Image 1 (cartoon, rainbow, N blue to C red):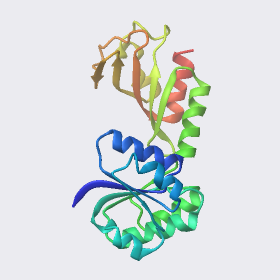
Image 2 (image 1 turned 180 degrees about the horizontal axis):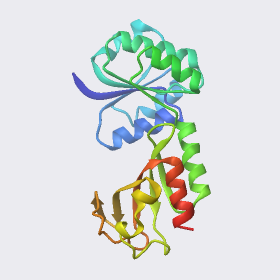
Image 3 (image 1 turned 180 degrees about the vertical axis):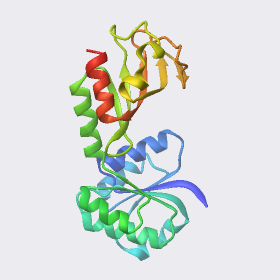
Length: 219
């Protein structure tokens, strides 16, 4: 089984995934129905191919069934996205990641066997909203509808106190699972670890509890 990737759909989302995978040293086959996009990525991807991803015979001829991971990043054509995903799963590809346009699209993708469904526009919107609401929140990773991991930059309100002093778990029901301090990363810091100004705290918990901590302890 080959350990390289196929990216189908070379718009902004698929194109950025293709570029980053190549940058990280992966071999990538890039597929799109647009000759202009394929020409652009012929200089970036390992292979760039013009193909209709809803054509099962075309995908078979490209050897899609031999790849370990396919990313379906088709833009606005939901029907093409669904049909492409269905064909790829039926061909036996073990890992298929698909971009969803909306919740309905995501439900259909889940039913036909997509392994990972991503909502790039929605997730970016959530990150931006959290960033706007608090200058201390640097990044946001949604774990479920109610729980997340946030990167929170410490300020003068909590700097100099230990995790035990702040009693974050008892007071807010959240946990600090790591601290980024310059180039250093402290994993599972002890209760006696003092928080320094501009430390970046990796906090896990319910979104409502993390926001309560930011709003009450840090403002």
